[in-house]
Length: 244
Image (cartoon, rainbow, N blue to C red; front, side, top):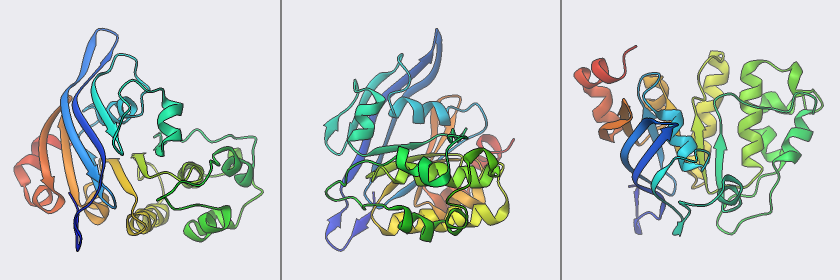
């Protein structure tokens, strides 16, 4: 948990005994994790380890989920995804899902939610400062953007909901190095603003650059939890749980 001059930071998310299923297939096994305000935590592991499933389960998108999920002191274990969103939990999926026929500005308007006490209030102008590429194409349809630009737009649209926390699934995957750099700067800015971020990531260098702590998943079970620096220094763990 992050520590500041006033003591321990507020716990934003606490997950206890999380199990998830796809049909009869048991995918996640008794996961426990938590995040504090202003903390970036990397959720790491190979393809198929359960990272995206964990995020979908936290967001309430998997009906076969067992366990307790608390968000800002609320038990949201049985809440629908839209109810979790209205409490200020944002989700940026790996597959982007922009509205291809809508412009950048129109996509942002789709994500707009009322201001929230204690959360940053985002406007298109503030987002264009955070993502200069988007500021250069406010009237471009989503379908005419590169994959990296669509990724930025998906993040920006989620921020228009003024969330307290964001689940960010594989933001660096398949995008140009310049976009990866902008993503890293974005995460650093959000952290400075006090937002909690759970980051699903396979790129160790990217995760090490922006994250405070890490959880490592292997076959749906937690293999490691601790500081990002300790993970980066543990060659055996990286070889057995992170290498392709």
